[in-house]
Length: 124
Image (cartoon, rainbow, N blue to C red; front, top):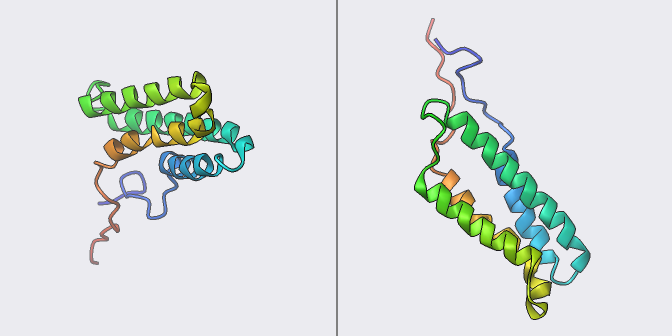
């Protein structure tokens, strides 16, 4: 029997994927409009928090271990974050886009989850 606790939500809002998508858009727009670098950083922080929430929900049965691909993606994000905070002057206009693109490996790793399916109701 499927209860509301076990049934997948059909229109679930995922903060992580949304924040990554918006960070990439905002990072791209930060090239002509440099004022958008700050919202890009805020969206990257929101994406990281959303990813940590997803990992916490999924790792309840695995003892809290994070797989190697996720650790590699976090290293890429860390390098992008360091490049964002301390970029050389010629690359300074690209730092918002660089930070947003650093989220892509994390998004790719997190997409290894099963897709949402419609709930199956028992016939009566």
